[in-house]
Length: 394
Image 1: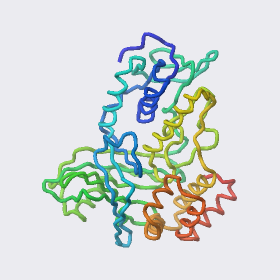
Image 2: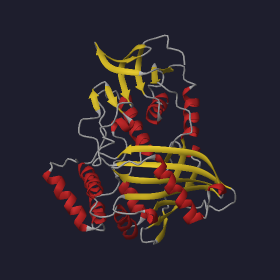
Image 3: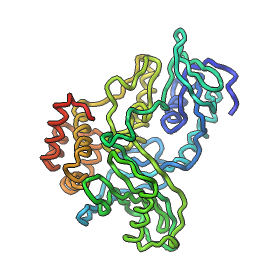
Image 4: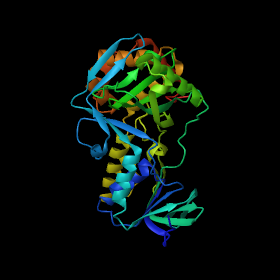
């Protein structure tokens, strides 16, 4: 896109991915919607290269563009026990990034005050009362805020003690109807091998089309062909599919950091705020971020509308953050298979309670009752280890 004719804006959004465009969308619908806004990204986002899923028991902003929703989910244990989870009143929804980008970009195109710049961002700096963004196409100034969604989150992808959600997914179309789109497979631990947390995730959208993702919650990344071989083996074992029985429509690979944001790491300055993965919007124990991002950015914009120009801080409850760290320490220690932890949770609690727990909407009493259903020793051991490390993960 063409370079903006101006260099001064009220807001600059560094990064035009899901978080950056969501923020622009909510700003455009607010009382601040006519202020000059610049979105900078080296590569325009319009591809169907990501899948975002979320669950909710109420209407959400982008429900209408979801490709598919489910109110029942399968859980398959490593010991080959299966349980169909009726999650009503929740719905589990799948959004394709291509559909979402098209919808949001169409809305933003109606706002002449919102401009886009294809440029590589070099750095942020301050000039007087402004925050500035240095790019390979010049410097741009923001009088109110710069939102940073491009800075790397502090997670060492080579460190086996830094837990990541890493996965490779295939969207396939079979040559004959075989899938049952009325329900999805949230966790299939029948593929799990050892204590490392690994599972298959299956989202059928029609009798002939489905997304299969081979997923780990662990610190050790694999070569992409490892995941591909696992997908082929699963399709053969559970569907009888050889490679000639389906067409591969899309492939998605991802690595999502599963670490809580360190205190005060979100705000670099009162006028420079991290958002998205950079800002710790990913739920550290699940890797889910879409709905959490929407709710957080809505709150952020509402905060600005009340003319509260203090640095925005992501709300986190201390006890829930501590529980997240304990869960992650359990995954690091691998004293128990990750599949056994999820099996205990889903077989001994209602799915509604678990979903509210993962959304951080449960009470302290409910949190404690959930913790009593997981294997005691590995969690106590992890909690003690965290205590002696000053509540810090390795």
